[in-house]
Every structure is written in C-alpha cells, then in structure tokens.
Image (tube, rainbow, N blue to C red; front, side, top):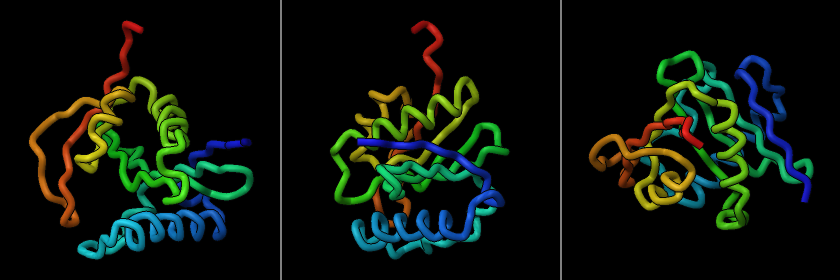
Length: 147
C-alpha cells in the first residue's frame, strides 16, 4: 500500500485538493458522525495549513493546523470512514507530529479517542466539554525529548 503525506498552506492548495479535503470532512463528520450543529465550512480554513494524506492517489486523511498560532491548533482530523481502525490514522498523525516537532500544539479531541491520542503522545489538559454536541477533551502536544 502506497501512502503519501503533504501539508500545505491554504493558498497553495489546488482546487481539486481543497475539494478532496472538504469532501472527506463531509463524509466523516456530516455523513458518518451526523455532525450538523456547526458548519463544516466555517471560514477558518484560509488561516490553516492542511494535511493531505493519500492512499495511492486518493485523499483518505486530512487535518487542519492553525500553524501561525502559538500554540498551534490542530483540528478537523479525519480518516475516511472505510479506513478507520486500519492504522492509517496513526501513520498520518505520526507524520503530522513529526511536522509539528517541538512546537507546542493543542487539540479538542473527541473523548472516545483520548486513549489513542495519548498513545501518540498527546496529554489531556483539562476537563471534558461538549463541542458540536459531541463529548471532547482538550489535549496538548508535548514532544518527548527523553526518547
């Protein structure tokens, strides 16, 4: 299985890449998780760098990073519904974390994924809260320098 990871600022995305990102987020969040409490296209994408994670030549994973902020915000993490649990999400997150490096970052993780993110090196940083009618937990990225 051939995979490829790219991360690009919004203004460098092609029309096809932007379409693929928005289409995948729609499949995962709107169709798969039935999230309709917040708009998927929220006006914040132009401020972000975007992950394009390919399997063969198809975008199967994405995330957005508010890369100009400190700490950076990571969100809209999505793996195609048909590939969730396949290990591709872990591969994509490892690439993203390598790109983040030692810079501080945070995310609002869906609470049911907290253990998975913790295994990847993310640390809970507060109490659970509701976002888009789904239980979330705040998590911070801390590069493990001792490894």
